[in-house]
Length: 228
Ligand code: HEC
Image (cartoon, rainbow, N blue to C red; front, side, top):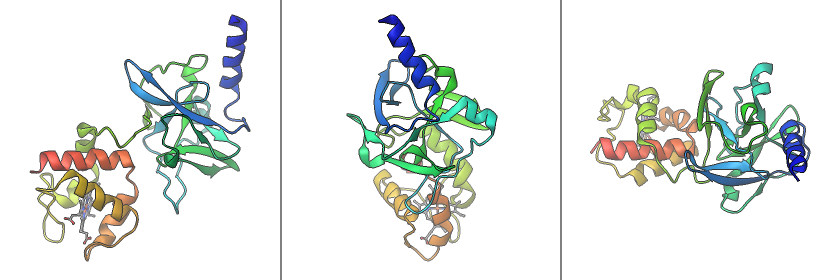
């Protein structure tokens, strides 16, 4: 039995980049890292912070392209639509095409295996800095848990130059004070979908296009809490 198990683990650890099977995405729960997505064999899956998310009309822009990176982080390939295991939101599953292969995405973000997890089904870390970005486990409900600190960091990077560090805005940049988190999230999703809200929506749309559902949850919670 023991030999059988390690043979199976070896098989999945060697195969992912070339597998032609339809993949199932499941999730597992770790005491240290909480819930995280796995493949059907229980192997942890990661997202890369510098990948640009896929939206309906645009392919994800992949940032792990060097041979060294692709050797360390292996794209999750499927031959057909990925299947959602129990507790995984099928509507968040998708694929993007890269080098004639279908890479599995969740919430628009390409999924990867970590070579450092090979032979093991428990993740070594929930966040690793490598190849110019962060490799993170992703939960089945990415928008369900807002991370205010991540929202604060992203606001300083991507929003403060227009809306001001305290969210009070200036001239044609509206104030974000006194808003409900749900309203901020709804507006960001509308801009992300390319909708026009005020006269200067063209300034907001490209910013919002880069945001994942998780980013929106983090930002809207931060804005509602910190800019009363
Ligand atoms: C390039 C400048 C710029 C940047 C960067 C920017 N915004 Fe905006 N934002 C605007 C402008 C201009 C508007 C008004 C758009 C319109 O007329 O529809 C706006 C509108 C908004 C609104 C709607 C406000 C309302 O009351 O209608 C929200 C919410 C918002 N931005 C959040 C953000 C967040 C969060 C970020 C960072 C991820 C961000 N913005 C980055 C310029 C910017």
